[in-house]
Image 1 (spheres, rainbow, N blue to C red):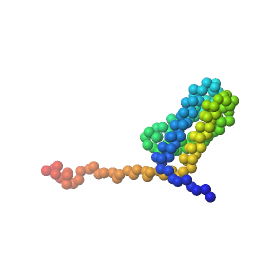
Image 2: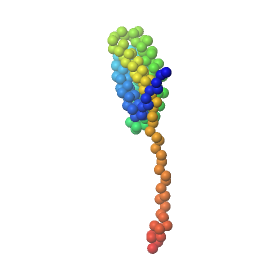
Image 3: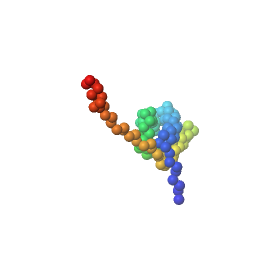
Image 4: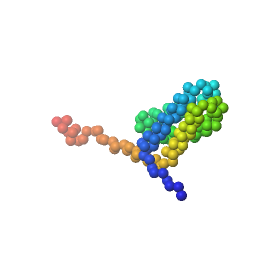
Length: 148
């Protein structure tokens, strides 16, 4: 029997995901500037997807909308997994340099860590409730004192 992972608060899940995405950003930066893949559209899809993913979740993180951040990132995870598998399978066709091997391994780690984070139940804070409307009409006593 597999134990259920401990729940994470939404804030903690976002913090962990953001740390993982920092690693993804470095992979993206390396590949974006790697001469060996500049003429290979399939390989350029990796830095493009990483850029799009990170930029897609950034506004939600900045405004503290953890539910939106996690929803968007979870929706991108299958695409990240797919490009990670492709990159790991294909990078040797373009370069056997250790940097590419480490980038492939690092990208696999990004996928693995994001999957591990999303395996936890996420606890979201309760939605804020709107306070009841306040009556701004003058009371009878207030309107009577104005009439005097």
